[in-house]
Length: 267
Image (cartoon, rainbow, N blue to C red; front, side, top):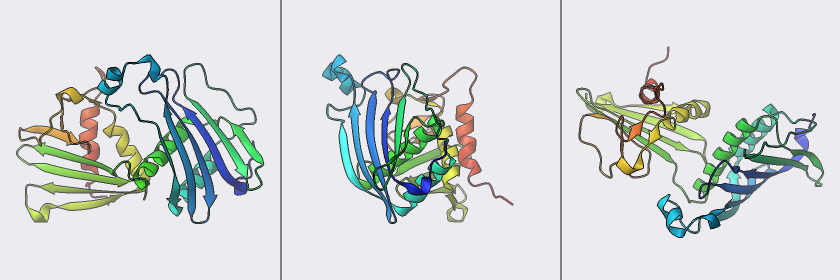
């Protein structure tokens, strides 16, 4: 389908994580994005669904509160306007959008012109790409609203050649950087700026392992080994509280390698 993207003034987006996501995790949101020269005006409304099936204790035990629904209106900077336009340009807008299969996530997007004409309505062909992009938008909203801090990761390797790596990323500003310190002293410190696509690739390795919060530590580690904290105030140890998701995966080694590769000099 040919959509005159230069005529798009507003996106009206509805997302439901789907019945395959059980409560209290099951959520849906409505997001309106209005394109302006200075950036994006956003109206965001998040709702958690089907929690009436659970007791208050069951909800709290999963790390939620009893009031997780949230609404926000505000603006995102001009760089997000550019990112949204790029996302729309590379997307496929089918003439006959397919409906979500039973149980899977529902994504419905309306592209509207300035007078309110509907240029497209339905499910884009590249749903996974939009799901990830919208997660980034949500993180940017949380940062701008000061509901969440920018992403921060701390990697600590305690052995004969101690290494510390700090990774910081702001979704609101679409910027990421990393800093590494070794045992050699102040001169061994190095910093790198990461491109946004590079951060996206790196975050896939960060979230590939299983994080066992029950066995995580509230205190910085002192024992030999590889450890990581993802900004939540707890530490995970490779092979103990940070685990492989399957028998034939190597997510822990891939995470370590991905972090160290940031500082590999490129010729």
